[in-house]
Amino acid sequence: MKNRITNEVSLLCKTCRFGIIVSLFSFCSLQAIADQCVITLQEGENFWGGCVTDGRQMPFGKTAFKRDLYGDNRGNQSQPLLISDQGRYVWCEQPFEFSFDGTQLKIESKSGKIETGKKGDSLRQAYQYVSRTYFPSTGEIPNEMLFTKPQYNTWIELIYDQRESRIRKYADDILGNGFPAGVLMIDDNWQEDYGVWEFHPGRFTNPKDMVHNLHKQGFKVMLWICPYFSPDCETYRLLNKKGFFLQDKRGGTYMCKWWNGYSASLDLTNPEAVKYFQGRLAYLCGEYGVDGFKLDAGDADAYVDQTIKAAQSISPNEFSERWAKLGLPFKLNEYRACWKLAGQPLAQRLRDKGHNWADLHQLIPDALAQGLMGYAYICPDMIGGGEHSYFYDNPDKPLDQELIVRSAQCSALMPMMQFSVAPWRVLSKENMAICRDMALLHEKMGPEILAMVKSAAQSGEPLVRHLEYMYPHQGYTQIKDQFLLGDDILVAPVLEKGARSRKIVFPAGTWKGDDDSVVTGPCTMEVNVPLERLPWYRCIKRAQ
Image (tube, one colour):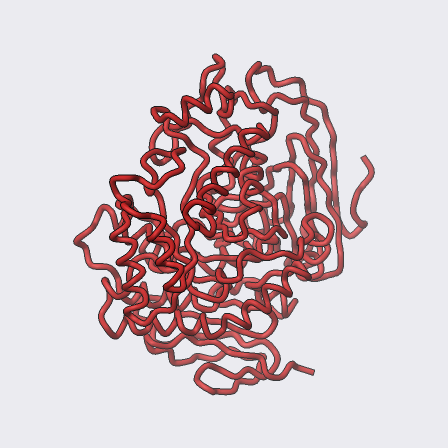
């Protein structure tokens, strides 16, 4: 096979034909043509891409690393893309497996053609090319309030006890403690059963009035949903007759094991099933005034069972992609799992993080990875951690107040910030005030953030940017604890427990800090960071 990239790349490609994977009911049954490439790495070359949750291990190149994207998006967004700081790229319309051994990059796809090349000599030039070519931005954005105001999710505060009285109190306490109104997400268990499109009558006495009152207070309201249906509800019986669910090898309804038990799974390849589902979401908007939806689940690994039968034969990854497409009509949306669909107006949250400092360290590198895969509309995880087990299993254990404060600071100047555990309930008055200041900072910066979002919708470029992206070949590839918001805002949160100072790398130019200090880069400086401070700097003069 003829080389597909310039002679600067050592490339071996091989195409071969596999036999039919015999499984009468498997949607994975297809005649696969594998495409394989071996690329010799250039001196000091670094790559980003694949799975967002591998962001903490990026860049790839110097050490051994392996990932198979087929049927596995690691609980978050993924993309069949690799790009390097030398301007090189790898793309495939289908999932592929890749590995680095320090000298070579090996790629193999079960079914798709691997496309490789070199565009320019920097990370930004490679990204701009792949963005324009493979996932151009639509020019549209998710609902503006996601960016201009804080978000509040009831999950950690209420867990599975989602009830009207507690939701009303949560909203009242937000405003009563001086936090600005924003998007309020009512999380899992507002329904009596999954697939029942009404509020639980035992926990909600007047949901329509509740939503109306939340609107009067300045909130927009989202509901948590998933593609699963409880098998003992009337909706299931009706839809099962219509063939709206995935089937098992015997032709019965396939029961998917997920974190809330066993449920029927919507067949996302059936247009009538998708139309029905979107119609029920539209019903919730019309009947109750709901503004949008948090579309949870949709993970590719939920569809890898080779015995599953669907209306159409597609890969597990494509199921994840179709779940994301299902939410496109609703501008107020949030996703955690996604395959491809970069450039689309979908809010993409980082997967749940634990209430610990190690997981706080993951926020920035994972957000940087999101941006470099084309997912511009980034939401970090819930402040203080969104993994519920710590809070649920240890109800009487004190939380780490410093961790919550530093988490709020880490989120404040990202495109979105999301609270869940109530700062006014779990923090001292002083620490709660710091979190409130961060919410107010985000609100203050909201118009500027929104302008960046609208610009990104036209250019396709990331909002959260790696220093290497803006300042190539200056030795910044390994910096994972600070980031750029747009072109000119440098953000350097504290991520270490007990730290009251930190080193900040300043690229070339003149930078004015939140403390009114002025720094001329390039340089590295140790700065004082008391608990109440989020260090951030604006570039007021670019280097000549």
